[in-house]
Structures are given as C-alpha cells and as structure tokens.
Image (cartoon, rainbow, N blue to C red; front, side, top):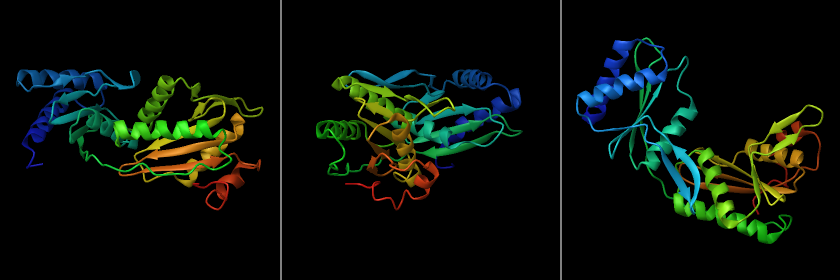
Length: 276
C-alpha cells in the first residue's frame, strides 16, 4: 500500500467517513459523505457512472460502480453484517475490466472499524478451445452457430466479466443473429411447482449454461445443465466457462436416468457427459 499513495489517500478519506457516521447505516449515506469529502479535497472522480456494455448494437449489461477514479481506481462501498462474498469480488472485477483499471477497493462500513480489500485485476488472454460437434447435437447448423457466437463473444470481450454479463452478451448475440431464445426459462418440476433455471434455451432445441471466473466447467455444472435439460425436455446443451485465464466448454446430453441424485454422483464417469 505504501507504493500506492493514491489508494492510501482514498482509504484515509473512507476512514474519516466511517468515524463521522459510525457503522451499520445504509450504503447510500457512506457514499454521499465520502463523495463530499472527495469533492472538498478536489479529488477528481465520477460518482455512480451508469454505462452500457453493448454487443452488436444490443445492450448486454449495465454497470454502475460507486466511485471511479479514471485510470487509477474503482471503489465499491458495502455495509455488511458478514464478510465480503464472492459476488462482491466478481462485481468489482467486472467494473475494473469495463473501466480498464487495474486496482479496485472494496469498503465495508458495517463493522466497528472500516474493513477494506484491495483487488488487482490482471487482464488475461486465452484461445477459444476447438471442439468437434458430437453427432447427437442436432441440428448441426444450430450447434455450429452457437459455437461461433460464443467464440465471437470471447474474441470481442475477452475474459474477466461475471457470468451474468456473459449471459447478457450471449443473449445480445442471439438477438443480433435473429435466433429465438429464452433467458432463464421456467419449468414445472413435477407437482412441486415452477422453477427458474439458470440457462438460455436456443431455438427450442438446446440449452446453454454459462459460468465465469472459476477454474472451468465442473462436474456440478454439467450435472446442473443435465437437470435443466431433463425438466425442459431438451436433448442436449452446452456448458461454457469464461474463467480467469482460460475458456472451457463441454457438450452435454440429456440424462436417460430419472434419478437426479444418481446422475450427479456419476457425472464424472458418465460417458454421455464429455467433450467431443
């Protein structure tokens, strides 16, 4: 921190805000007080700049970080009862990528003393994996089109966004391509009621699940996509992961067994769950 005097200075102003207001108020109060301190000290910043991430002319996501110091720092303010959650870090990573900044700060004003985490974003480059399409992923033209759109998203936007952003990018690509799709479809789970599923149905023929910022497509990711396929009545799907340093992709066939627990336990060994 001593090698980053600007960040240290912003932390000092946040500490002054915490001392003045005390812990546990709503985030908006800390934001207003800190913004006033920055203004009075003539520290140039943007407060809650709202900007759109576009793909082929369609809105994929909207970003609104708390404070942006252009080219220097992005700050997110929280007032939490517990600790920082993984979603807080993935949110800040997305803001850092979008604003092309390397350094971010998470502040938690909910504790007796100000808690802060310094986050460094390092852009990573990776090649999109080459996959042959399995014969059961029909029609071939649709599977090819989906792969091309996912490859295009990676080419144009790279790695570093959270999964909700990549879902938005994929939905934008489908709109631009004129492919019918449904984001987070609802399925009736037997007599238990409807459930919203974290996938995108394309042309009523397959489903795509998207994850991000981890190590790759996990056995649990593949099993969950099989659950989606089962309850949506679809024959196959694609699970893709936009990780920190690599892209991972798996074709997944719908389960033939009805026992979901058995499917999840055997996901790693099931020959129907595999890359082509």
